[in-house]
Amino acid sequence: MNANLDLSAIETATLGHFLETGFMAPSLQALLPERRIFGPALTVRMNGDDGTALVQALSLAQPGQVIVVDRCGDIRHACWGAVTTCAAQERGIVGAVIDGFLTDRSAILAAGFPIWSRGRSPITTKPRGFGGDINVPINCGGAAVRPDDIVLADESGVVVLEPTEAQALAERAQAIQDKELLILERLKAGETLAEITAQPK
Image 1: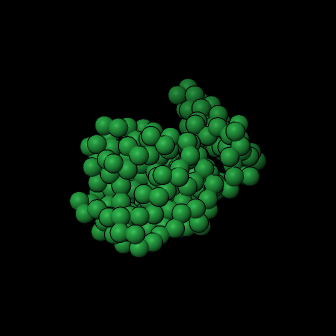
Image 2: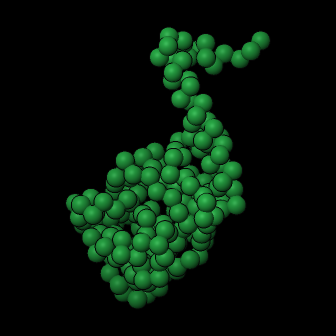
Image 3: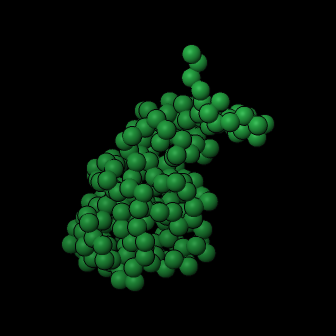
């Protein structure tokens, strides 16, 4: 990732004004909606109830990465909880995006760890050693994610950006956000939205 890349003020919803691709399904919701994270993806593919690949990924992760987990359609098992949260924080991981479920919600909230998932389940994965993949192209929430793609996640959702395009997209989004501030000022001053958005004749 470009060391100068800073997406901390960029909203996913702003990118949604001009991008159509790279967005994960809206059903992946933030556990801590007030938090925004960004960083290069550490991808994980897990099948069924085998949590081995995630254990390995959490042992290899580097500070600043975002764990992105493809659960391969599993709609029963939680692969993330209190222990994985602690492991992630100790490795400097900034957040996780899971196309599946988590458990230990209260512990994750208490730890203040940002995570996006499809919800909660009391049935957990186990380290069975059957397989899985780390740092390979995956699909998460309907979006293609490659290792080191830039993941941006906030209260509105999750978007995946090509690393070489992220800076230009951020600059375009910032310009839109700056313009929106001016629009809000004009609305508060009494102008109507129709007047503000009217196209010149």
